[in-house]
Image 1 (cartoon, one colour):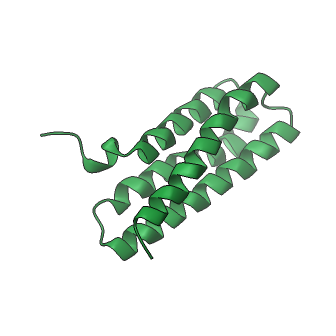
Image 2: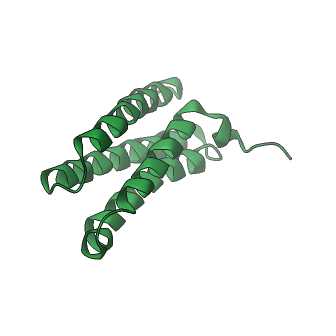
Length: 118
């Protein structure tokens, strides 16, 4: 059995990269921050890829909706990262490492949604 279709999608691959970077980032936080904002940001980042994956086995309209949900999860992740930055939970170097991944993922999500048609 080969890879599932979603694993071959570049948009999914970038979403997985972001989720793993977020996971590593949160590991260094204290217990309070891990238990509050940390859980929220991990879940939102993980849900990006989960929605992309789930959409690949759905009809086009449902796939489009799931990709839109993935985009919403990306925005939720960005929001949580902004809070983490404002609360001094992430460093400038960590932010610089994550920002290009977010930019790439945002672009790929929009292109993927467009490729699915209206």
